[in-house]
Image (tube, rainbow, N blue to C red; front, side, top):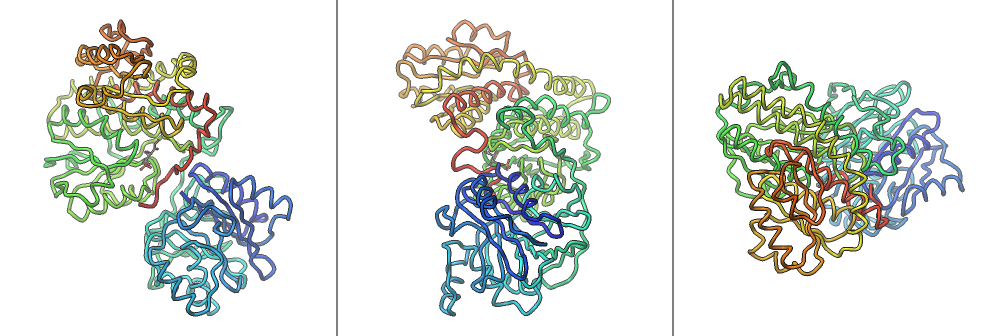
Length: 608
Ligand code: F6R
């Protein structure tokens, strides 16, 4: 999705902007641009394609010099990824430039109105209307002009505007799209994502919907739509700059796979004390769970699959019916949610539009809410009654890996904490579960050690037109995540299904040479999965099994094996997913794919 960044007061604003845009590349984009206010004019450089093209243009034509600037990476929605449609967009008189994330829903109506008044549009974007509206509203004060223009906008927007007449000032506004202001010394910033800021500052403030930031070199003031100044808390960002660098790895994805033992350890260790689960820092005590009669886990994509992976842990440990809902369905659907429902919104970014909307809907219906997020201060974190962070650090590769495993591990802990609150487990049982969860980082490392073996196997899969994944119970949830990883980065068609469903249709796809990846990490279901393996093998399938070391039923049948250490089935997703992440990675590498930035995908899906 689009990324925005801005800086005022720095000695070399253009380079700050370009470096910030570099940090936002991972979000997915197809054009980029910057605008800098210099010598009473706004100098804009933009181009379709990768940031490298924009950098080359700046090298050729010179970097714009000036005191305030805004930058953008665009993921095309309204109009093709052309130079003209790239942001920033200028007003008709060229004195204002705007960058924008989100979608202006009433842009067509506004454009018709502005064209009727004589405005000439240079692009097909929804964003350009903002530049023309600000120009028309301007009476010598940029903040007032942006406030007036915003009254006309419907939709989602994080937008920022610079003006040729006010060289030391940026005005930014947020409505349903993230916007963070970075506080520096004699220079201040904004961005859609903290990753773009941490190189310059760790002190940030998060705008809420309907707020405007007046950003100058020595001050940042935040106002509501009525012009009242708002006091904002400055939050210290914990992320390490180096965490968002490749550190010698060829791809961020591989680095992030390798970081999983540390990320899971960092996530669980602070929540374990003397054999008990403790979420005191998050205010998650018995009261948060008592009286809960239903748990609804709401999420999208891999976060949804993490929810699937922990559903049985919640039901087994707490005895409370638990469902996992796609946020995009939940927001418009009829899922029963009321004051005795605990809704757990799971989102790595904390900004996924559907998850935010589903959570808002559940808040309106009176549910108790809990956020599991990786980004402190994100919208999901701020909307929920309680926020529990995963401490994965920045995840740069579009395909999530450590985001997913840290979500699983913290959700296991929440299930245990809830079970204790509901008196479903005693002290000894809690201590036993805690020991098992604390052992996950080591087991994940052992799964990572399969890397050379997976890399060899991947050569065989690189030309397959399609892959089938199957499993039962938690293994099915992992099969879904494994298939998603494979398709999103290698572009090979992959389908996951519950192994018991095989005979109800999918087996029709199996013919000589069809690769089937069978997940069998639950000993209790091993004989059943072994039966499914025999069925597909009888029809010519080639089976790669991901199994626990002691699962002999399956070990004897598979053509290829990836053995993970024994893990309690309820917790196995966090370990058995690792070989599948590695397989997707190596297959994609063999196929020469753009692993960290797969086509058409965005890291943070901030539009519906
Ligand atoms: C897949 C992936 C996506 C995200 C999904 C939700 O590798 O990363 O499927 O899981 O877009 O994102 P978050 O967790 O940020 O809400």
